[in-house]
Length: 403
Image (cartoon, rainbow, N blue to C red; front, side):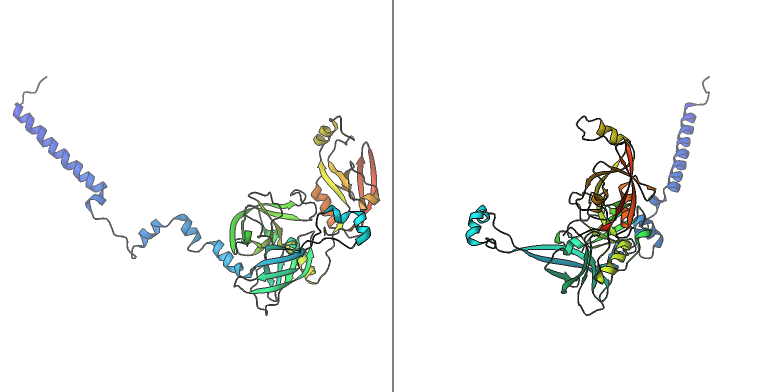
């Protein structure tokens, strides 16, 4: 039905409605967008609310100084660089001088000597007593003729090796610097947990005063697992970069306390490093300072953990020289000549399943039992040899250094 209002009135009504709608939209826009109607507030020192909004969560948590900086400032002055020198002499590789006919005329003492060669080494360490006692790795000062210790303030001193224990890779060096030296605070490695911060400080590759950051990857990583059979250690494993030259430097926690001694003993380790727990080092360092020999009982076997699956795989090979018992235990791969194990009659292929009545399935278990025994103590071993079980008595002896 068409409206009977005149056309002019209908057009006027439409214009009035459009004007009213435009006014309403304008007012609404001004209410929800005050920034377009008012000047933007300026950011000044008197605008604490705006400054707080600009601060990132990381800045609020860490502050102007990070915990790494605080930790390094606490320990850094006590970290030292250790330079070593060693002179070696060599004979010329000339078969003429080894000929028996030649020696008949000139004597066995005659040989062609090459000029002495100087070998230089570099490592790190840290001061544990203000009198000048320094803790480092044994391999840093191994067989060194001269040891030079350089402090962070630039002073250098001749170092005297007080004691070395290659089995734990620890050494104590003494310098005479007049006392009152900065000392690194020692923490406790027993309180360390996987995931804790780990800060390595040292002189890697000759780059002095270098700091790397990571976390504790795992604890009690045995030397057997790391494939270092001549050591008796349970390492702290970390992903903080540890390179040659870092050896002997401290591994710190977030509070700047020493929890371990960095040791770069695996040249193929990529992205992981190992540190000797500080609690172990404390015990050894006291004895090394006095010049004592550290007791390390041993029985003299090279071993491998055995499982039934490994034994079945080995036995399935028609060229296998022996048949292994399909069980869990410690497989003796080799017996060291003239060792306690050799004297006890242990043979390659034997599987050690018990020591003093305690079941053994891990190499670390056997190492712990032997290490915690006394030199000369008898250990009762239950051994599976083929399809026969034997009881053998092994008397431990002192493990000799590799040198």
